[in-house]
Length: 377
Image (tube, rainbow, N blue to C red; front, side, top):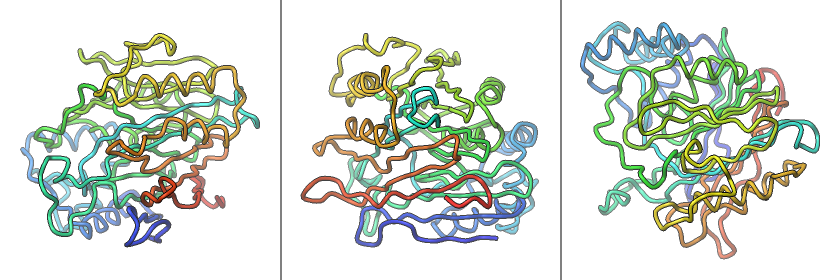
């Protein structure tokens, strides 16, 4: 069963946001996602047959939900799912990448005992042509103009709700019915570069990783093991990931420039994340000064840390902390959406950017979505 509704914005606003709800088998969900991606202009990409065979084998062993959805993609395209020449995933309709700030507030630091994560998804308001130094093409929309909220309720496996800017079978952040939350952020804003030759490889790409976690894990310990056992790759803009669960656990997953994997934890305390490698800068109060290239990553983290240290925070307090570290009006990007995830209620509450007004950025009303089937938001 498929249902799609427009939930925020319109043709005259910066964003027009849709909520896509899918019930059925993983293959049926994959078919519906592929049909929507094709409507947006996606087509499967040619790929080296040896790489493609290895990709399918990896998914079958480690991420069977995605493997089944690729079978659904093949059905939508009228293709043999075992063909080797075309990649049947990566349902992308714009390039990826972001700035962003996030703050985990554990149950012990919450006014009602609910663990929550707040996040700003910061991104450019320009088209890809403009970002590449060219004039926009006729009718070209800004890269972040058409995000989706996607709720999937499979016959078997974990139900979830995710937000994605540009890839229908990946996500930028999400929550599943077990209360596990995951979100991505640029890991090193100073050295991040545009993607180079972004062909699919074996394993998880940057925006598949959060989807992999919400599909396969129920708590942070499972997520650690899944990520340690996973094969990952990026295309020039390494990301790191904040993962939290309904039991009060949280960690940041990141890889160093040498490829070594790092799990950063602060115990039963708030955990702040912006856009620098935490394993190289573990002390929030001993960070380098910001430069023009760092886009205030160190200042944003210090601000979040100072506001949360020793505090008991309500959802409104979390919102105010995020608002304090939002981009200035003279910056080339905006907070495209701002979300508070409640791990106990399995919900995400978000506001979408609609454009600039005389008094600042305009946002949609707060929209609440659940990851638990049959439970009203």
